[in-house]
Length: 66
Image (tube, rainbow, N blue to C red; front, side, top):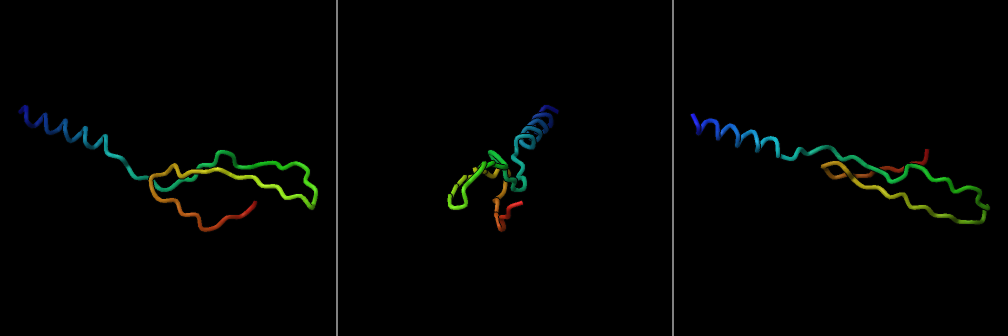
């Protein structure tokens, strides 16, 4: 009976510690930025930082402004 209990415990621990692969998910540090008033001849740049917090490869195929 003891070997059966040991095997059951090993299986339960192994299943609970296995990493589940999740779909890709993008996470931004900030989702919008206000440049304020800018003269028509000025050029301003702002970098949006993001990372993939999902478990699979994130592929960005299209970017648009709202």
